[in-house]
Image (cartoon, rainbow, N blue to C red; front, side):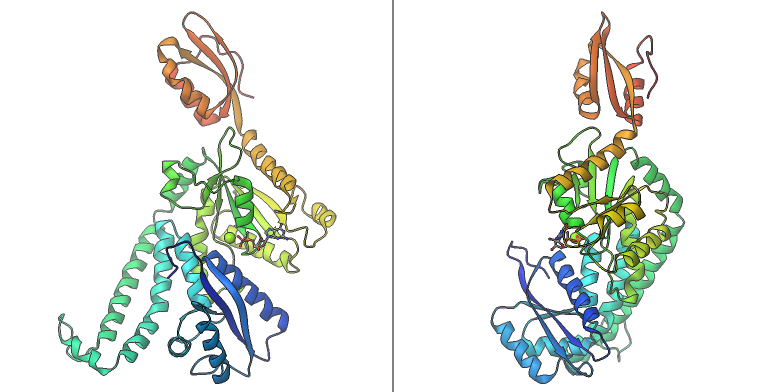
Length: 430
Ligand SMILES: Nc1nc2c(ncn2[C@@H]2O[C@H](COP(=O)(O)OP(=O)(O)O)[C@@H](O)[C@H]2O)c(=O)[nH]1
Ligand SMILES: [Mg+2]
């Protein structure tokens, strides 16, 4: 759907405004769709709207507007993103008439979820939603393919009267049932999931959560400094949205960008959204990013917290980050109302550095100080100690070296056990 080469696909974001929809609401939804389009790698060239009593049943826009759209497409537009869920026949007609790909809001969102779904449950859930969305559209495509399609249906052990489209629909139904069964069996494995989370807690991970457009991806780039992906084998295969906090320190902190909350989320996608967000559960710290300049931020903040609680992230520590303060918002009032919060602008490097320090401080708090004994025969393992701990001091005797280190409790314990403790453990962990 998205081109493999580096040039982004040129798109138009388009919508019909019905009389009952206030301008502000209409504009906000369009702005959100533009942001979602960017997330998918589209270059949004313009926004195209029409005020109309209702959606045209044949082609969503009125006839004249469809002509206009067609002219724009001929000028080099490759996709039209419609800010409503439109019917399969509307999408089909529109595509044929204007001559380019049409994606509706639901499809755009599904594509984003698909990219973010990492856990087995999230993948299954998103696939169910996708198949549910596809089924009626395939029927439409089959209808458009015409009656000769029916001739092909005799094979494959299906009853003779079944059309190709019906066959596909049955396959989709079967696949949905299969995925649902898989999901049900996964629910029984919840405990395992919790265990996995605990296991990962040794790794310093912070997840950015919050609404689309709050500035999560911008902060992610600013905090991690480079476009270089974390090469760590464990994560490299998992996703492309995990990077190390820059500059790297001890412990090495990994930052991940989660799927954003969406103001105008189609009801059928709520469950997929929540399952996809569950990667947030693997973090030991959630940086909840809020757009302080958005007049509706308090409601968004509340919804985010509710959903985080629902998915079981209630106990994961939070750092509340009010971003975009350069665009608006009352910094003093925010600090007073939300003690411990960070108020900042992602555009101010000094403020990004402050956020970075706050994150680092959170993980450093968890560090312990200890002494590790390293026998002379084991010196080749020095590298590992230096890579995983901060070495504060070093002394030596005839048996080996004693390294005074600060590091993650589990790592330190593991290293101590591996080489045997120093004869006289000097002081306890702080
Ligand atoms: N003025 C201002 N704009 C910001 C700030 N942070 C992000 N943005 C802009 O807000 C838009 C959405 O940011 P993005 O990081 O993509 O949001 P995400 O959907 O949460 O990942 C982009 O156009 C950013 O350039 C900020 O602190 N101040
Ligand atoms: Mg983003």
